[in-house]
Image 1 (cartoon, one colour):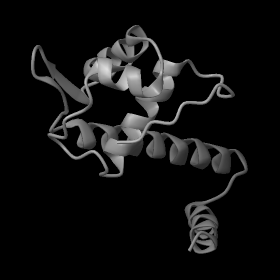
Image 2: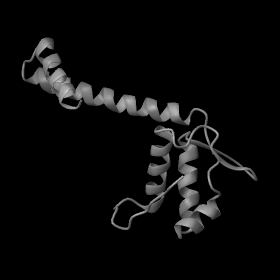
Image 3: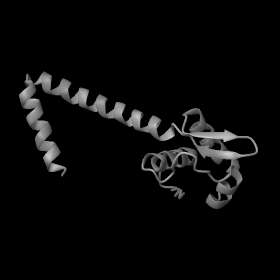
Image 4: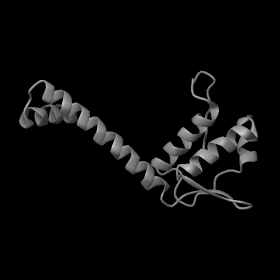
Length: 125
């Protein structure tokens, strides 16, 4: 697991940690059951406060991404990757819905909307 913090990032350090751990869960670098570094070990490695890492871990646990067991440490939750995937799919669906609404405001029909989608899709390949 690699965490890179930036003083230039306006996000608080604990949010930077959370975001990077979630990204690594999403892309499979941190599979379910992966044992995360202890709060103290990660704080020492990153040269930051234990409180900052603790807050990140607490938020990750509250979000269902990790499970923390006293005396055992924290591990990536079995459902963590699926939860993140579902959240991302919901974001994508919302973006599509917003795009369709905008197209409807221009009085576009389904065929015209699909044609735009195909053009954009082909450009990304």
